[in-house]
Amino acid sequence: MRRRHHAVVVPFPVQGHINPMMHLAKVLRSQGFIVTFIHTDHVHSRMLKLNSCSIGEEGIQFRHIPDGLPESDCRTDFAKLASATENTMPILLRNLIHEINERRDCPPVTFLVADFFAGWALDVAHHFNIPAAAFWPGLIATYAIIHHIPSLISKGVIPSNVVEIQLTVIGLTLLEHEQGQLSYVVNCIPKDRVMVKYLPSMPPLYTANLPWLIGNNADKEFRFQFWVRNMNRLRKLKWVLCNSFHDLELPILNMFPEEVGMCPIGPFISDLSREKTTNNQSLWREELECLDWLDMQSSKSVIYVSFGSIAILNERQLEELALGLETTKQPFLWVVRSDLMERKQAVFPSGFLKRVNTNKQGCIVSWAPQTSVLSHPSIACFITHCGWNSTMESITAGVPMLCWPYYADQFLNCAYIVHVWKIGLALNPNDRGLIEAEEIKTSVWRVTMGEECAEMKENVAKLKGSAMGAVKAGGSSYNTFNKFLQDMDMNTASDGLGSPCS
Ligand code: UDP
Image 1 (tube, helix red, strand yellow):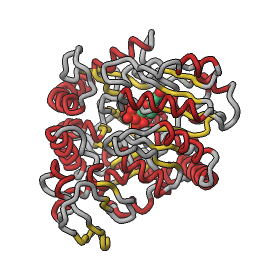
Image 2: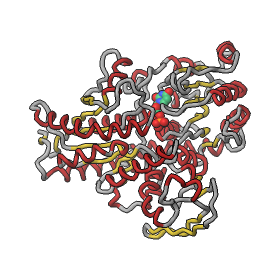
Image 3: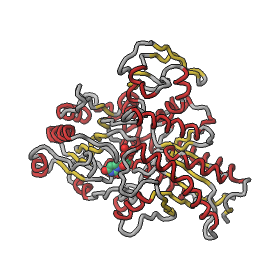
Image 4: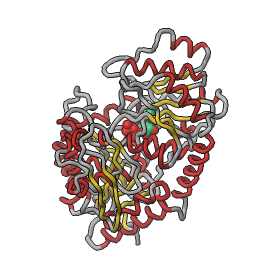
């Protein structure tokens, strides 16, 4: 007899975390779970404004609690949002679970899934003595770096003063990896930017591109401590669910001993039928008309451009991108969020909008139904900031990428796209950090028509096939998820939690 589980799902309150956790919530619901999905008041009210009647999903209850910031504050400062949520939400979530457990109209909470970025929620699960899983929202290789921070520090690969990493870390070579032991030769010649192969089977990464090295020193330090703190919480867990799949990251997955509990259960594929295109968990209004515009374009002709929900561009870069797209002479669909420019409206080069409208070359929207866009037959390539969701969505749709990483894990995602999976190219900035129009034009040509394009298309088509296979009955992700469900059932079977279903 299977128990009727009641799962509480806690995402970090930004778009790129809400989307995959919502997917996870739906999968749990499809397995007979009752699901309570936790939003912050801010996210909830933003969604209510966009979805006139409700933000409901059949079978999923939404509850919302304050994130600890005044409503007028903007939520783009990571350190501010992460500290506020961590300081404020645990006690509120505790109270909420107490309240749910006292109700007679639904079973008590038996299980909790916390975003890695909302690791504090695992402490709440511990308080109630219910089993919990973490959700890792990125590439498993990024997780591997964070997981290995203590050994990387002890071997001198990452200096203990993490903030000064660009000045102190040095060329080094990974020698071997045996039974989890890493061994490096460290050359102590300080350099500004060196490439380091941090773990076996991982492409080299600039030291400056480690995922916590963002912003000023205080930001870097905050992020580093945040990663370490949450990783320590996860070290005691049995399951780390991830939106990735076995064939995509096999060598890295093999590095983890079983007790780490990595469970790749992706890709999280949306239902792409037109009627269900709208993501009612969007924080921006989706402009569905762009799908009609795509219908009018030839097969595999359109460049799709999007930088996700957080990245911002400066004016000069926006101008160069606009000119680059125009000079490709290919149709393009470009997402220009209302907050893509810091505190300003986007200003396009003189005459640009008129020209691309008149010759019907471009469609500019403020938010697109991205998964439907990527699977549209007219899409040729994706200029992306390499956010993990966007990367997985592109792989699942079989679309090659032009990589424009912005920060955090996006550089490692880019390295995998370009050097490991060989399904895209990197856009290279000039020595002032600007990606020029000519670079954009040439790279679009290379990825869609150039010599290397056939190989990239073949590789991404193969990965798309593996992705689809992974989630089918009998596939690796399907099996991993079922094994996780069985384990979870066993973990709750004897502790009197939950109520049995008839
Ligand atoms: N997205 C969307 N419409 C857009 C741009 C992005 O629906 O116009 C979605 C995209 O499908 C993805 C998420 O927003 O699921 C962005 O997540 P990602 O990890 O790629 O980037 P982040 O926003 O976290 O930097």
